[in-house]
Image (cartoon, each protein chain N blue to C red):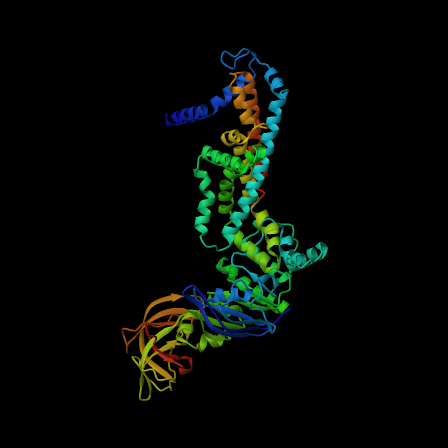
Length: 257
Length: 346
């Protein structure tokens, strides 16, 4: 009886999480003009429509560029900050760490507005670059926190051993620190990519002519519901799944202790 | 390669805590020195100073006559075997062992050859392609040793290298360490808190306590004739008999003893190893004693004794294993086995 209840609960929980996504994907194949029940038959025309839409494809490419670029920068900066704070005794280290992680607690709307004000003050035109900077601001705390937590004693001792054996600081980082941190670096990078890929508010505030995919979808939404939106949503979802799968593959257990 | 080491008036503090004070130590080239002491005695700090990981507040470190006090670890003729091995988990054993040579700019083929040779030296022939996580604790220990030896250091530093191994493996690795040291001839400085380990491998034991050197010398001398009460207690089990200076030597609850005592302390402590107590007659007669708890240890019977002359005193004796001792013994001691120190003020 309790077993049955447990299964029922599991089913309900997963249903709650996955039903909206399922409905989105299902009605992306809708052979009709509205993505609402009843389901009128399977068609791929919305996918053809979406893939043939030059603006949409440009936005998709922009999103990929901003996501990968901003994540790489956030990872690099996060790594340097974590290495410095984990390996050297600095005055006010606890305060520095707190400030680095603080943006996690600030609403993205505030971050976006702040950057918008700064950009306009400095006379910097809005573009994918400013959106990318915004995403670095959002993702840096996360990258820093993941990498900082991974720089444990085992790692510190291996670095010490490398130095003892004649490695310069650069060689220590290149040959020991980064390779040992690879799982954390991969995790931080792809987590940043998925967050940046879905991010709307900062992208919306900090782009103008070239926009990212969520912003493009937003402008499409204003002209009403259409199975096109479901199709593009399904594609976005597919990309996210692919990224997660890639992480699992790279970090699959058994390759490392 | 090998070189002598000189520590000249080395002192170091961590904040208000004085970790080392005025350490003077000469280590000969090719010597196997063990720094022995309880945790917090400064032995690991001393090793870190030798390796260059800690720069002492005062004093100089000379290796092979060269002042290396300010030389960083990478450019010192020392390498360290770390307590947790600190192997590089992402590299094969061959790359681990060859790492130091790679840093020295040795070509790949030559350093692989050297790494394989070092792995063979520590009994891991043909394992060069494995990774550290495939090895047992003892094998990792050997790889750490091979890695540190591969760059042919003048001085090898070992930081509690056997601490993580089980007792049996530790005893066999001790013999192996000693054999490897004899073969390569490098000066070894080894830190441990295990006095049996120290006695098994050291040419010279340096007993440390609270940042000072309490005693140093060959294992048998430090064990049998310790220079301080602390060294006496740390080197193994010890019977402590309270005593006072008397007109004709020392007076103890077990009777007077006609020995000359240097110094002028009135209250003394007599130290007596359990194996120095014998059943029968000897130069110093302690009178009869009742045998309390008795346990067989293979090499000896360990007996708790209650001497009749001082029923409050408890002595521990190691008695011959060939037959169980009688319930009452007649205790005797050779005064040469005694060490006498001023009483420790608590």
